[in-house]
Length: 370
Image (cartoon, rainbow, N blue to C red; front, side, top):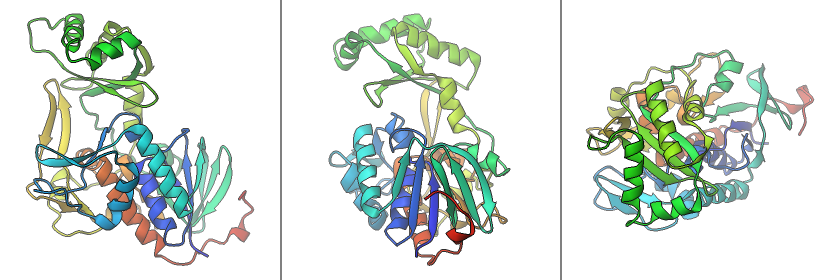
């Protein structure tokens, strides 16, 4: 019988590791607290699939075709497009969630939505998971939750949040405002209303963004020099100027980005990786300030990832951390958080876990729900 692997978090990285490991015979349980797969990529943080081709590539040739081609076939909604120095594949939240569900189901992953982790403990070299809908004994545990809950339950070191100066929140808009924003002729008047509300008439305006999110909602963004109460007030003023109903404010967005696993890999060290290691990656470091989005590009067209990064604790040899909570520095985590990188890392780890062979934690040792 294949190894029993539990994945906490049904975002892109979590689905990737579950899909790849299950295809190699492992028994997979994927636990997601929300009602759909896709994580933050489904919620509007990512509106395209990126990091899949080399930087400055003349053609959209996949860096890791064995890992990413099956995924793209399920989640991309059109042909790739060149944007500056990179290639992007179009997608949207519903297509991403549906494609991930198909891939995992076809591979034999047992998906449990609406399943929140209540407690977590060691059992030999494995782990006992107690969830809102039952318990399970796993040989390997993959934390793809992106937060600090799992680390806290196991009393593991957590890194600081390392927040961007990017305030993001989910809002609901009246139909007439949606029409105005989507109409190129009406949008300038709506932007002027926002800038007047922010007190920036005739001055350098803050960087604003308004993008469609999931389930008919919108993601409102205001970029500031740093996170502060003043910056938060600007976001709230912008939401009020749009007469929006706030569904999830910036405070909730901030809380989900904190508490990743502590790690030492810096951005410079990441960008200097000449060996493939776990997989190839290709994306710059992105940050936000009052002028909008800034970029720091690696000197190479692509770089590798040391496999040891995903196993940050010597006394937890069967524990792995991927996704936004990966055990690296905050800057390195920001460079690795795009959809393509998340899929490459998750799928490459899943291949390794699926190839480990037979399970070692016997279910007969502990009576748990199946």
